[in-house]
Amino acid sequence: PVVQFVQQHALAPAGFALIALAFGAFQAVTVVADARLQDAIEGDARSTVTSMAGLLTEVLVLAVYALYAAGSVLADHATLFAAGGAVYLVVAVLAAETKATRERRPFSRWQPPSGP
Image (cartoon, rainbow, N blue to C red; front, side, top):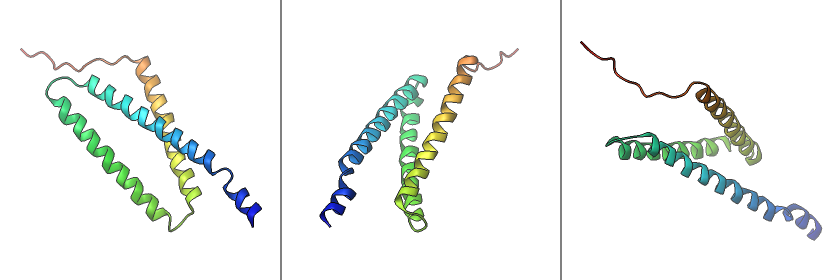
């Protein structure tokens, strides 16, 4: 029984270290995204837009928790965790493609047509 316990739990510290590393990376990405959002917005709307972005982020996080809880009835945690990772991978690929598209076509601010 002792050998089996050690075999099952020997990698637990490494797993927690990886979770901490991933959490730190996601926090860093969030800070960068918030800074870029604030940099892209000018005028009085800046605080409102960043507040709404924060609110929507929190709502999305709660939805993910709810989906994870509902999914735990159907699948084990490893499967749900892998599915969540797959979603992040898809988002990363889409974000990279969007960035490449923006670099090919520089962003220009919309200007209203000049009237008569």
